[in-house]
Amino acid sequence: MSEKNREGKSTARERLAVEREKQKGAEKRRRGLIVGSAVIGVLALAAVIGVVAANAGKEDDDSEASGPVVAPSGAQGKDGLAIPVGKESARSTLTVWEDFRCPACKNFEVAYRSTIHELTDAGQLKVDYHLATIIDGNMGGTGSRRAANAAACAQGAGRFTQYHDVLYDNQPPETDDTFADNGKLIELAAKVDGLDTPAFRRCVTGGTHDGWVDKSNEAFQKGGFSGTPTVLLDGKNIYQDRTMTPAKLKKTVQDAAG
Image (cartoon, rainbow, N blue to C red):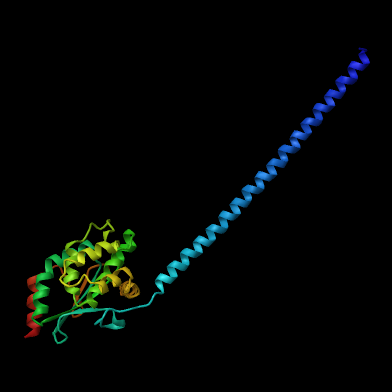
C-alpha cells in the first residue's frame, strides 16, 4: 500500500472517530434534556400536590373550627359556657376554669374536692365550671378537647360531677395524650353508674360539643387569665391567695350563707 493511500485511510478513520464523538455528545445532551424535563415535571407535580395538601389541611382546620356550637344541657352564663353545679339560690358562686390535662387543676381538685362537694350539697355554694384546652396548645395533642367534650356529654346525661371527678382521678401525665382516645374516655365512663350508654358513646365519638369546647377555650384566652386552674369566689381570685385553704373557703362560704 502506498504512503498516500495509508494517509487517506488514516484521515478517514480520524474523521469517523470525530463524527462518532459528536454523535455521542449530542445523544448525551439529548438524554440530559429528557432527564432534566422529567425532574422539572416531578418537582412541579410535587409542588402542586403540596399546595393541594396544604389547602386540604386548611379546609380541615376551618371546618373543625367552624363546627356547630352545641352547648350541653343546663349550660348557663355568658354564651352558655358554664356548667353549673349546686343550687341556683346559693349565696356564693365559685367560678372554676380548668383543663382535664392540667396537673395543677388536679392538685386543686385533690385539695378542695370534698369541701366543694360538701358546700354544694348543702346548698351553700354554686360552682360554674368552664373548660379550657390550653395543654393541647402547649404540649400538642387533643386530649384536653376530647375530655372536655366527654365531660359535656356527661352533663347531658346528668352525671357531670361524677365523671369530672373520675377524669381527674385517672389523669395521665401532662405529656401523655391518653385522653385523646375516645375509647379511653368511654372506658372511664363505666366507673360512673348509668353513664356508659349508647347516647353517651355517640356524643363522645361524634364530638357533639367540640364547637362549644372551642368557644369556651376562646373565652378563656380572651379573659386575661394567667393559667389553669383559675378559681374565683364571687369574682375574687382565691387560687392566687396563698392564705386560702379548704377550711378557710368553707368558713367564708358558710359565713356568707348566714
